[in-house]
Image 1 (tube, rainbow, N blue to C red):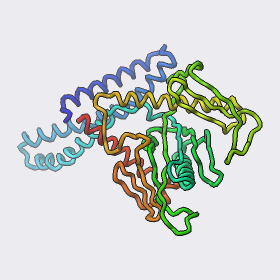
Image 2 (image 1 turned 120 degrees about the horizontal axis):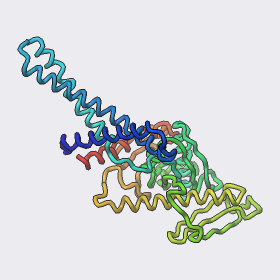
Image 3 (image 1 turned 180 degrees about the horizontal axis):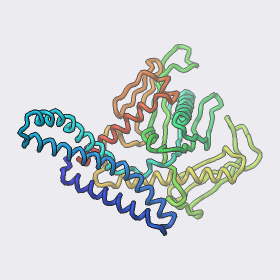
Amino acid sequence: MTSLASLDAKLDRVVRRHAELADTLARPGTAAGEFGKLSKEYSDLTPMVEAIAELRNAQRELADLEQLQAGESDAELRALAEAEMPALQRRIPEIEQRIKVMLLPKDEADERNAILEVRAGTGGEEAALFAAVLLRMYQRYAGIRGWRFEMLDVSETGLGGIKEASAEVTGRNVFERLKFESGVHRVQRVPETEASGRIHTSAATVAVLPEAEEVDIHVDEKDLRIDVFRSSGPGGQSVNTTDSAVRITHIPTGIVVSQQDEKSQHKNKAKALKVLRARLYERERQAREAARAAERKSQVGTGDRSERIRTYNFPQGRVTDHRINMTLYKIDKVVNGEALDEIIDALLAEDQAAKLAEVQ
């Protein structure tokens, strides 16, 4: 358990840093880039400093009441002090817990936009139809949260399903809320084409990558092999008479990205590079995570895209997230994006609890 002295020392450092930042920001002459960085740090620390002030006021108030109770000869005043103490004794640990959560190290990628990739897995056309359901779920969820959802690339089956698709999701804390969606999503339902009414099981894979800026990941042109080809629609039907589609291979890692949604080769190349940077950034991020001396293992799981994370059982109307053993009997609301927050909030809370257990 974190000792009170250790926690107090940490809180003192936070308060001092907040005061230093306020002083620096008030001085003229700070460079624009530096000012923006320091302003963000100041803004991030402000809620914690306010919580620290609330904690210390409550601690002082409790100490005064304890002193009053111990030293006051007036029975009525002692009884008043005694009546007020339980509420403070309950409130102080609650504030401490809130501060400990604020002190947890942040995933630097949490505030970033994301590249969302959905691929049909095992199960043929039924898997492709389910991949399309998942893509619509995230598109609707983005709309509910006020995020921008822009399709980057989609490969359709021609029967309403998708082989694979990628989209850019832009908004506040996109990666923080979508990162636990990475993994294998399994569906159990009766396909419309199934005359006997048998339940089929198929799967789709979701990958959520934090979007990388050019400053995060420098891609050297000499490390790229760029092929251009003619765009094609479902079933190989030509939809473009020019070589506008682009395939980029990152030679050092073997990562391949194809883009053909735009009619312009230049636009397809720009989109493909954006996806490539996101994949390289995620690769680097995963390598840093794996290199940590004591890698955290929690019920939330590793986020590995090969791990089965969730089952959507349509006949029973339920969605089960296997990492936290959570089941919701509202499959329609989940796949419409309306109830997805219930699962995401539970995953975030579980992740937070696991991190807290590590530092206590």
